[in-house]
Length: 462
Image 1 (tube, rainbow, N blue to C red):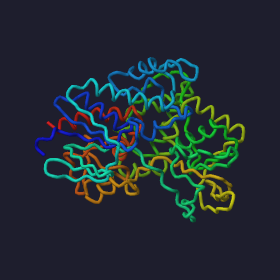
Image 2: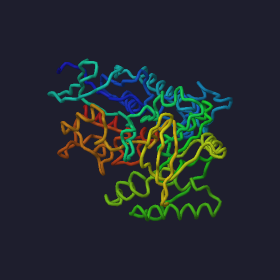
Image 3: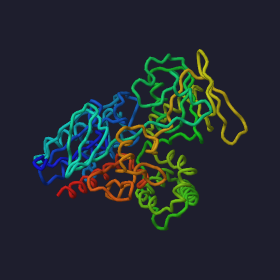
Image 4: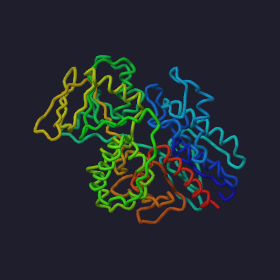
């Protein structure tokens, strides 16, 4: 074992895994063997960028999507070399390009880093890790295929997890063929009759993906979305916005006071003719430190009461996508309700879904031929049905993060075990750090984490 080359295993090769692997190759100062393990056939895709649908656009303009923080034009330059036009229009810094194009970019970045690196040997493995076992000075990785692997450092980059089924009085419906639990599955609306009535549980980004995909394939049946508050993601501005400064006064330290403060700031800037989005954009750089400073009780209040409003303003959609939603909503084909699902009653031709409308002592029944769970990111690892996560929890090598969100980590990204001790060999980034960092799902945030984590892992390997 001592003669093995120093090996770092990255488990997961979606955006997070690809970014951290790229940074490891970029910053390595000694010979390394890098394992990149991913069950999907394509590297760099993950759930977000594996969609082939041209209607699924990035939720951020091209100018903010470089994988390198110190080379902000890297993606734009690549885009203009390989996709100078998209949908008949020239690509610019403000283009919202299809997500499959960005997946191709991530693949190209990894290939370039692998070619340029003289010290790192990259080995790609299409498989799934089901268990890790520390053994002496290395870690044994057990693959689904049975192939044995060993590494000295391991990075979990396994991305997002499927939505949880909403609690109802008739949970047996979730085994029905009329129900789809994964809105990102390539088969979720395949072969669906164009006049089928579709009910979408949730009204966030996942709902938007399904709604525009239905529109793109010529769907004419009614589309209904329901979520607790009925909030739909707001669109990005179609023109560049000015920067404003919000740091002249300390931020409030309670969830409700923060919400009121943001509302007041928006009122002030809009009264001056400034776009409300400038307030949200000015606040984003402070979110990580602000989240960490909030008392635990206030974090809990934020999650219960403020989170949906913040996410509707923060995680915006491309203007073209917003126009599509407006088009099908204005036509009457698409409706959004605020409420909660109570029960399902499945018949021969459809399912009757009863839900209670928010702030109204009233129930509404919607008949649907298909129900799709679009409730979004599941951050509670205690509910994950993922073999590796289950195994690591059982071994006590990891523990849930604050308020049950993601995993508990140090500020360097090292995972914390059941006894509260930080690992010297197990690390993570991306959505699994959400409990500590909160805003940790956008590329601009993950690229920062990836570079810092790569430096920390490399330092630990010296």
